[in-house]
Length: 433
Image (cartoon, rainbow, N blue to C red):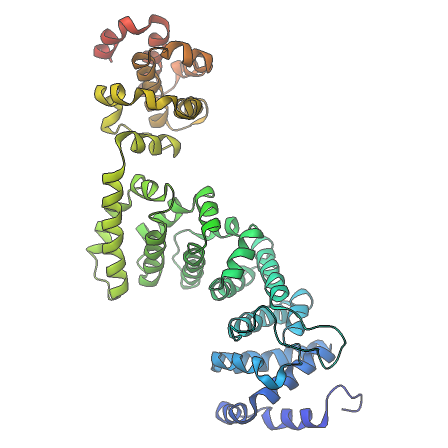
């Protein structure tokens, strides 16, 4: 008071509030909530002593934890000329971890509680303490998203940085503008490593909130492309296959339901064995009716997807995902005869991927199947030998002739023989193989 950093009224309000029981504080906030918010914000704006800042942030945090709806007090009409966001945004970038964590949590709650009629501006008018305009909601959200992405990349606290960021994102990604900012900040790829089976209580909560973020992002088309690019689906399938926590299973199943009709997601889910997993999940005793309904819808959607997929679509998915196995179509002469011209699409894209698998895979099964499929292409396509030679496949396949796996060497040999001998010996080699 002597340095005029706090008014007499402010000091009086603080004395009334300090060290009181929660019931007393609740009554004070019910009677005079906006005035308390104004005092707290003005202290954070004007006083920089770390101990004081920590104390006031703790008061606000306790107030909001006891009743999150109190975040609406920050948007009371009587505070229209107060820049209620600026102190917290500033403190995010300065101060110790306690200050950063509390500021982040408070900002996330107050931003989410703002009246939706404000059209992008925190409040109208000019802050009473300055001639500058108030911080716009866009600036607040941009600053928050940047800080959250930084925490996911390089946490300020070894054990609390990432959980705090994910917890706030789970609240903020309900907003379309935050989804957009998060995607633009390249944030989607930062979530993917966190999608992995969890065992401890803390890691289960982190997994749940991460999956909640992913689910919220499935309502934003550009984010779906990123989720596909960074291979989120295989990780989500691993989680739902191994998780027993109902809330985790529910949010992942709801995510699958949203993604089912998007691009190649449905086909990928089929390829990753999700139909069988869904059947297994349906056999378990879940108490959540929304989950049971979502499982039924997902099962029906996957069945439709399987019906829609032509045999070549399924084959294409298998090759593009690198999940080559001896599914029936590989050794079905009708499949090759009916679909051989499909291999010409996108400048022989599928054939090129098969050759890449031969060149780069470390797994014997995909290597063997890829060699076999290249040999089938040589046999069934009129210009098969020429095209495969032009794509420099011979040298790559020959390297596998001495592979430790007999399955790989057998199919590499078959492929090389087809390359050298041509189509007229194909039927003999087919019988031999």
